[in-house]
Image 1 (cartoon, one colour):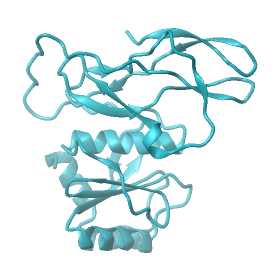
Image 2 (cartoon, one colour):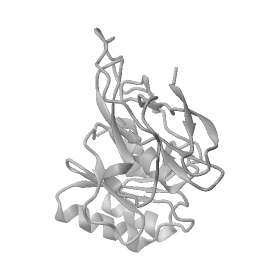
Image 3 (cartoon, one colour):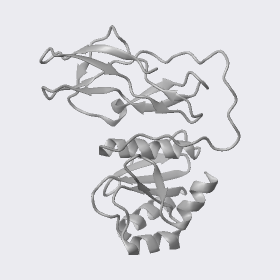
Image 4 (tube, helix red, strand yellow):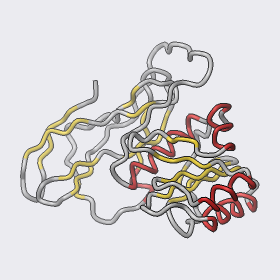
Amino acid sequence: MPESVPVRCPVCHRAHRYTAPSYPCACGAPVAPPLDPDAVPVPVGHRAWQEEWVTVRCGHCGHDGEWPRPELGCPCGTVLRIPVAGPRAPAPAALPKSPGRPAFRSVPIRTARDAVTAAVLYLRLLGHEDVRRAHRSPPAGVGLAGRGVLARVDPSSRPATLRDVECLWLTAMTESARCLYFSLAGYAEDARARADALGVPLFLLDPTGVPQPVNGPADALDAGGA
């Protein structure tokens, strides 16, 4: 069961009850960040990408994964960062993985951050465990990078354009990496045609957070994995 701790806002002093969200590990088991009930929550001011993630160990298989750091929004307008305890020790024995790829479990998409989380989870399902935010930011959206892979997550309300697809493909070519595109609003017709010609997998992120393949390269990747 996800952990729940009492939280008091240090700004308005309202009392809350916070329950840690669960995320699916690559092995399929739910993972929730271990909360520190004795630490004081800190209001979020300046944001830095490195501070948005926390390492959490799966109690089922022992894998260390990077997950969004727990936060709570108080009605007074303050966003509180919920303290997390240190990594848990792995379970004494882990059940073996079932053959084949585990079922994909994602997070509902309500914000741009949720869209990035869904893309990260999918890339990990494909075998890219080291995926992080790319050092080179794309012209629009959020860039993700791992060993041998680049991805762009476009959380905007406009369909991705031909130029968007070509820019991602060119960047991947210079880094000798494969590339994937995740969009919330879909793709222009010429962008889809160009992606087919270049072999760029295109995915549509639906509200449940499950990436849906929308072209041939994405179908092949979704069926066969990394």
